[in-house]
View 1 (tube, rainbow, N blue to C red):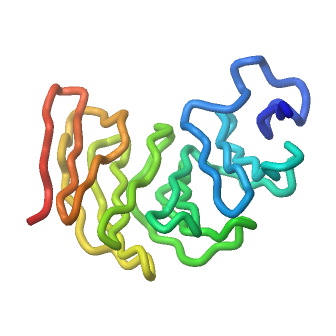
View 2 (view 1 turned 180 degrees about the vertical axis):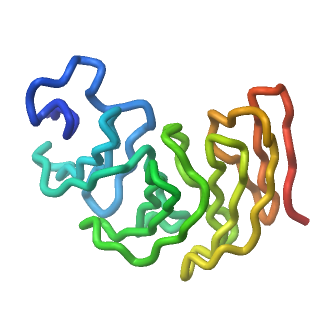
Length: 165
């Protein structure tokens, strides 16, 4: 099957608005794909049909156990949702429009805002555990790498910052 991005499927969008700058994730038979109009299509992986959509999403990331999806909103929000798109929790943290997916490692969810502020949240309830300004004067255009309790952030200033134990 082939499916257009949510923005393209509504008509009038340029070819550039198809899925996506951030890679899709698959959760319990549903494909989550965020497009350049910040629309996230939830697509049945058996049929290729859009079954739901969410607005304001810049990127998507899969949970460590594969049972839920993390959404990076363009407006200072990260949320954990189930495979239908129902919100489990949300946290107010710096994000921005960069399509860099949230990363979960060791029950902690990491995201770095486009302005360089890294945030760590509890995967269980979204509680913000810490924040750190990695590159306060430069953009961060990549997702956070993580292993165990250490998160790694690269900035456009050429830096690599390790955060954690």
